Length: 160
Image (cartoon, rainbow, N blue to C red; front, side, top):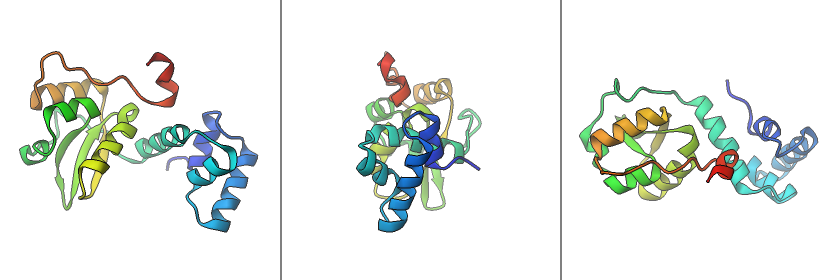
């Protein structure tokens, strides 16, 4: 089981335990999502909430090796080469009525934002290594000189 969002925000140094309790009380009182309560009560940067959410999601979903996954060309065909590289997304296959998309934990926020705007059907993410994602993108979406975006997670922004 993965940690609740509040615990991740404490771990990341964004909130303290008292603030988590206060945000939980606000959430219970108003029904707003926990992250929204944190933003409203403590002026937390939404990117900090996104990063904690990405940690939480990555802990809940599985990690795959794209070399051993069955890839459906109809799935890879839903995004253009430039989009796949720019947003760090690799559509793997349809799984029931949902599209399985691989990305890395450090690109999850970017990938989620793109896919939610680009697709109206249900999408779920699986994690893969950066090297595995690059290898899969090179095979399915060859683009000479293409590189993945730098990690866009809050903790990685000093390098950006």
